Amino acid sequence: MHATRRDLAIAGAVAIGVTGLLRVSPVRADASDTAAIKDNVEGLRKALLAADKAQLEQLTAPALSYGHSDGRVQNQAQFVAGVMNRKAVVKSLTFPDLTVTVAGDAAIVRHTYASESETAGKTNNVRIGVLAVWQKQDGNWKLLARQGFKPTPAA
Image 1 (cartoon, helix red, strand yellow):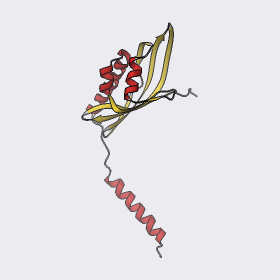
Image 2: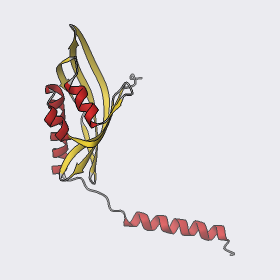
Image 3: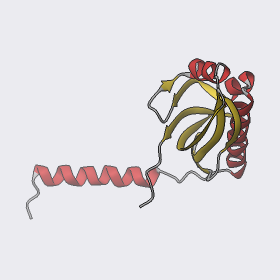
């Protein structure tokens, strides 16, 4: 059998790929990390409800990218200012359907954002999906990125 350059290139690529796969070890989520993330998600929920500036700043990363379901994206300062200066009175805020997947120093958090608020006597109910990325920074889990989205109607 005659080996062509193409055959050798393919064999080399496969060998490199297999070697890379063998070196990768699965990251096991530490139960304490999962619990800490859930605690911080709950802390963020409470800080949003109470408009607690110090907690909002403590739980979010300086490089925060906070995406709203309407397409707006805010950095940490804009996000905190938006919560502090909101005109609505938030009556309730829950994060049902919470899931946490830890991958090294990052975690993927998904949940529903369900709130009831009032602005100028008018009630507003919001129910959106959220995908958030938390990152362990200096031993603490911080919200690094968040994107809200409007869920598609059930089929």
